[in-house]
Image 1: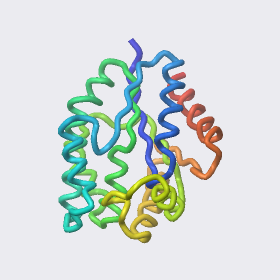
Image 2: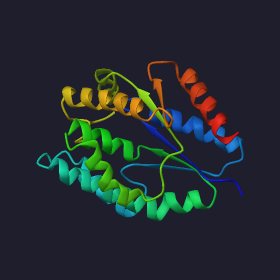
Image 3: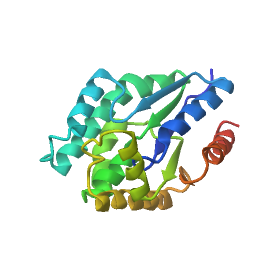
Length: 207
């Protein structure tokens, strides 16, 4: 049985994660993996219900601590019900966002502190940390412009440009802190170039 592999895709809103996840799934399946794609917050009935609360534009009074705890709760359910069992059975799991999002959005942009947010999330993720994380780095204004062209913005996407700039910079800071795990990629590159970089790293990982 193949060893399970856990891959996460991170980046500011509008950075092109969904496109690269689809291309990576196709590649891993050709390499013989059973591939599971999931997203955060979400991926289970309970986690999707929590997602509806987190992203609801009407809940502007939500405190940063409440936001942090809701994300961690959705993550705990996803790990318990979906990600953990999939990895333990040898599948490749690709998650659109994971704990790094909380470290950046709540720890840095909301000012709760990376250490505090990580400590809370340790209970949620247990032993499951990504084998590799791809950070699609994109200027905040570009990402939000892309999102506005695609759909109506949710509560997080509707935050100020300054907030989204703090998120983008927070991701860069996190990549510098964990260079052995986080692969930072210029998201303004052509799709095929980004795909090539990702596949190159995956080849190194799976041998």
